[in-house]
Image (tube, rainbow, N blue to C red; front, side):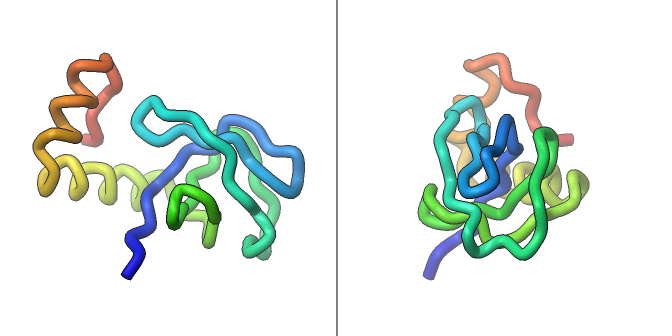
Length: 87
């Protein structure tokens, strides 16, 4: 089983995108995407490698809040890094 993590697009070259997940930035493959992505979009990312779908900001924030609730160490990392927690 693979959990999709919400990632914010920082930049895109069409085939890959640089994304941000809780302050970590890495490139993801966009070949499974059926639509274009732009900076500020949110993507569901699996295996820290593949973007599978675009998601609404509200869905991304809800997923982040869920992850922060079930993984207290993640919430602590978010607070310690100065990243704004999900509402």
